[in-house]
Length: 481
Ligand code: NAD
Image (cartoon, rainbow, N blue to C red; front, side, top):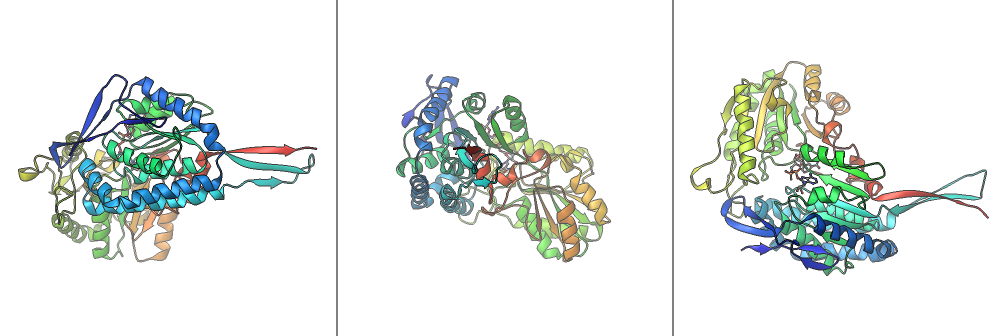
């Protein structure tokens, strides 16, 4: 079934003003067009920003209860349709149904959490020599631009749209061109919940993100996506406009000499492959293994890779889906070929899937060993199911190697020794260090995000107790008599 997706601007459903569209095909079956969406013009995006600007004053005046009720009802509307949305998400971006079901059920919980944030916006009072009362209050920023990738199309968007609205901002949301239908499902839930027209506007398109970022009326831009795009957005922003970038990673799993081998193999496989076929920002691309465990770990990880069932995500028994596009598959394969040219050896996988999977963008779980420190595979993000093994002989070397990349998103450490675990947690340069846990996953009440080139370092504001900081401005008032 093909879904016709439209922009939502000031409460009206609109095509692109010049009628242009783009299509998203099922990554598991290129013959199936899942969604057709507007390729928005600069004028369309400007109209959406104007609608958000016009709606800002009235939305800012709403009470916490009014905002919280709308977020709660939007979550309920999504939850009521979770199985339909999960099936659509699988068709649109490829993740197996088990994964999309988790996401469809988790997103309403995010909205419930942010509904509560509407009540938790606080200020402070300050002793003053001047007047009896100096206090600070939190205001909304104004119009927030939300730009998201496709790999968690509902969940990531809810983590931005939810807190933005709870704080009293209006929003122009630009979903990924690979998941326009999911963008509209989120907006429909808010509409059903009674969100006033113009408070949440949605514009689609390949160029719409750049138009949004270039509009100075957008006071804050929150972006999750690739470093290449993040750099462009960073360059386009100016003083006085707020920016939050959540970018890529080259996340290592460190397997130390005392690690439980079976548990470590499971952690590597879950971090690197999974239903998303390695297309998670926190997915692991490197295993740094003590040389004494290399062969035994490699054997176990290859066995786990072999046990994965590749196929369309709506087929029973499938545990790993396709890559998002043929172009993505080509990029992944080129990275594998370059690794081999730089001395690595393919142990399993290493070529696009053919046979009955040739009609989709499938790439098998791929394990390489003999990856050279400093080589491209050891250094650069590969957004796919590719893991490279590197060995070390002592912990100092392992930590230096873990840190020898420009990224700093997530890391996993497999060890039974608590002191070693604590040293790794302190010295590995990553926003999230997970001891005996996979690199992937998030807790919505704990901070999430990266350091170094993995983001703007505002990860304390993406999830967790300080999530509202990005969406609010503190104003200090001196109350004289
Ligand atoms: P992408 O950068 O290609 O696209 C992300 C979004 O940016 C899309 O909506 C796209 O249309 C838009 N965009 C493209 N060019 C733009 C421009 N010039 N100005 C404004 N917007 C523009 O990323 P992707 O392929 O969708 O996602 C994969 C990347 O996202 C990976 O690098 C992954 O690591 C990263 N990611 C990070 C996190 C995190 O929380 N750190 C989470 C998920 C994904």
